[in-house]
Image (cartoon, rainbow, N blue to C red; front, top):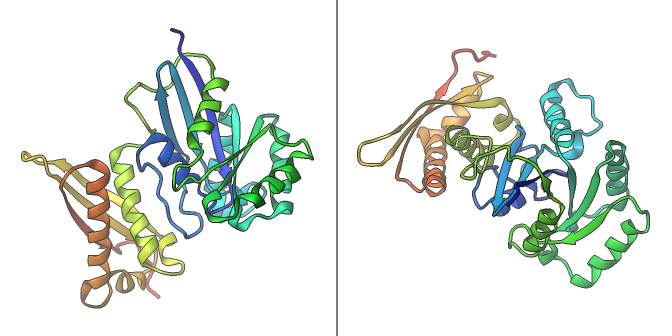
Length: 285
């Protein structure tokens, strides 16, 4: 049986549900999910292997950076375009709860410049009346700027099977890029660092989560099978340390407990997590 492959970039506005869709297709939490904007910074790849088919998904930063020229967000824009250029097909994910026809059309017209098949996927169909979905599809379909449409709930895994079956039928003969036991281009250290970053995003406000970096210092499986992890939270400004630690160290404790629980669930192992806030290169103001 010949091996087949298909590469798909998942695009959409911030919080459209890109990471949720990727995680539920692959079956593992390889991309963090958070309501705050720009939580996906790296180009994260998810791999789905079904029989002789390998479907590769690129989870990109928000499409908000498709046309922006912000020097501070160069990495986000570069990762976005890398995902687009590498893919055979583009999934443009639409949040039905925040549906905005003009914004969607502007994005799709811009994407048409790369001459790739575009699938518009309407997400969160469990959160609005079903009768209001079809008019939205017709509204875009009338412009003939997308190839096909799907309606799903990424969170509740509704309609995902139909989408995956469509993608399988679009695959073509090719050697696989990844082994049959690989589900991502990111290793467990990256994923555990991302889990801690997600805890910080959830528990701290304003600019702080976007100005810290999680560095792994130790990732060691003990003789009893437990996993010992040591991480540094590198801060870019001295004043962040007190906020991250919290009163009597309560905030950093919450971050550690939340991260440890999620890492244990993700890696299916008992985890001992140690976190240290590093300020050696931080600016004092």
